[in-house]
Image (cartoon, one colour):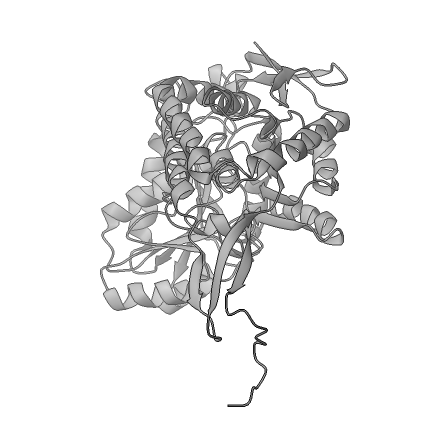
Length: 493
């Protein structure tokens, strides 16, 4: 299989003819060769998007929505094939890949409906015989730079709102997951998207990202990834007064109070900490448990972690797939001696498999760290792997303080039967997403997704809030009085 760019309605190799390999992180098998784009390819893609913008923005929004509805139907028909390809490409177990595709379907259908809404305001004017209203206006060319951990869902979060509002898009996916990006573009092409409206460039972010971000014809950069990269993008774009939407890192926490249903809490911890091998921006890399139930929580979580089966995500018996790359595996493994040096205890896992079939892939054991203090590096830094740190707290106020003690603020949850504590937590937790009696993962597309503090720059994806990212407001006044009326100027009575 060979994967190519999609520019101005044509599938083609890069200007250089160079390629790179797309491999299965579970066993190293070759999936496809991939064209390696150059800055000249980026230029061609942006130019195509700019040309297409003039006509696409004039297509009635309901008609744009009809294309997205057709795309959603194609996704639904191909859901299982897409999920299997995703599992091979980035490693997560098949059930989670199906969920990733379903989230893309949900987002596509949801945003398609905005083709008949995109609500503005009609308000009373302060002068007689005058009409006042506001409406959304598309921005122009959008650069969508997406990560590998949700290679289908997250691109739909960015591309679908951009398209429904009349923008055109240059799509630069992570180099680890080009296949799912190609599949998404193929679906939109088949659904009837005109040429030039969506353009795909494949290659590494280091080679292409800065050029795309600073391109004078790109009007907004929508990025999901690490906080360091987000800061770099923001710096480059800020000098050019470009709009930037960043969804960045997290150091998410589950709080377990002494009145919690422990069985339910443990289920939530295991799912949130080790789902997608911990490679979610909302993964629960911290568990903050009341001292009164800490021993029970630790024993149960450790027992569950030790029973998890590592393997290929297509194997029905697998609980935990690989991390995405050797670099990711090395990063996760590097935190274990750091934690031990600071005084933490490895209660489960902590190792990279070195024998048998698992040694051919990028696996890391599900790991539980105990005796962790809130200021330790493993309690402050985003590890992005199957590692969770258990921290003890005296009460709900202490737990909230610990939740808020990192620079991140994406997702958090609390397990409690006390409604007063639940409401205090909902009010005081410095996170953009808060769960009660559920884990830290599982956001739905009809509500805003994003975080506080260093988790982003204040924008939100999903829900109606996504429309604010990809449009700007235009206020319109129509004076049908037939004479000059001066707003805010006193006139004789």
